Amino acid sequence: MIRSFKLSELEAQCGGQRFGSDVMFDRVSIDSRDVNGALFIAIKGERLDGHDYINDAIENACAAVVSERSSMPGIATFVVEDSVAALGHAGAINRKAFDGSVIALTGSAGKTTTKNMIATLLAELAPVTATKANHNNEIGVPLTLLDISSESKFAVIEIGARHIGDIGSLGRFVRPDIALVLNAGSAHLGEFGSYENIVKTKGELYGCLKPGGVAVVNLDDVATEQWVSELSDCDVFSFSASGANADLRAGEINCLPEGTHFELCYRGEKQAVYLPQPGRHNVSNAVAACAVAVVVGMTLSEIAAGLAKAKTVSGRLKSLQLSNGALVLDDSYNANPASMKAALDVLVLQPGAHIAVLGEMAELGDAALAMHLEVAEHAKNIGVNRLYCVGPYADEMEKKFGSGAMSYGNNATLATALEKTLMGNETILVKGSRSAQMEGVVSYLEGVLR
Image (cartoon, rainbow, N blue to C red; front, side, top):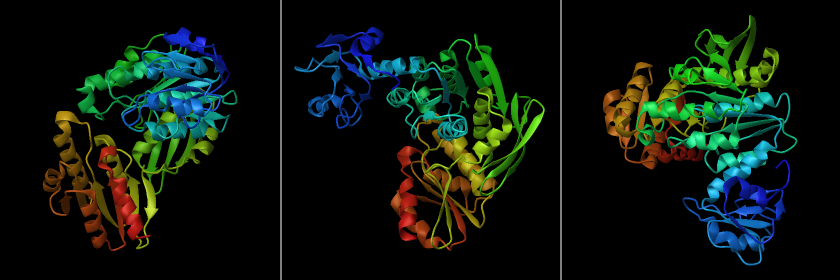
């Protein structure tokens, strides 16, 4: 945190009732094991309820407690209707004290990769606080805001959504100086009900900009026209990875198995760039990150130097060499139709036979079967040699792909069957939604073929 603040400051933001003294604290925690001198906010989660650990927090010397239940004897307590909202307001207090630049981003695909690229680029200039992993929900966003310290000059906040209004709700705590919406796709279509609702939800971020802020927009996404038409009281900076007439664009793209060369073009200047991550989709992510870097004042040469340091994150097209010579592209962290096709495009750039091991893409609603069949057809059309499928649509995907496809009832059976067929000259893409737990296939192959 940037400065200490009192319980009464939190009360002024979110209401509630204080009991005991108006305690001052310089740290907030939702972990009862790590609360010495901190404000402990009891959060009810999917698996654990922090209210059950309030006594532990008191024993571990917390300064005060935020709870949705009654006050606790012997310690300052702030009773609220919604402790998650209280956490958000605590994060907002720390954000308000920050005089650096806050960059917020969202999108249906590429959020975490782009967030990491932005943080890597801005670190060339000054210290950066950024969302850890993909902690982009109603708990992760406030905790990231609370992580901002006086040493940081930039804060990069990733915001996700599962429902209409989620981004707007979190964005009011973030109040970004720069807002970036990467794209609007079919991820979580089952949750949102329609593509139009997804577009509306992603666009909520621009409405959270501070007055005079900058909206960074993707001219390659069809939803951008709607978003731009609704913007007011902000500047607009555009980017494109497809050659559109944007403020910043990528050209001369050359996709290689291990990475991508391209050219950044801005105001008549051109800069050769190497991105150590493969795939045209990562060029789009990179140009989005570069657009943010240009807005904060980085030169193209500084951007090129920073982008060369971008690292591949585990579970996101990370290359793993097996002892038999086969190569695994571990993209098991998550999946949606667009990212699935993009990963398949990267697969066929690699040497040897191309094997796709695909799990379910979750939360697609009534369009789920059609979208899984589209992925199978795309794999066939681009020359994938073999397709291994698991999940509720595996049989239909096998039929769509035809010869060379196999479907399985569970990950373990698939992994065992796959391992027995490997000759050592293959590249194997493993991908699926979080619920598909495709990382288990990767772990099996690594364990058997170390």
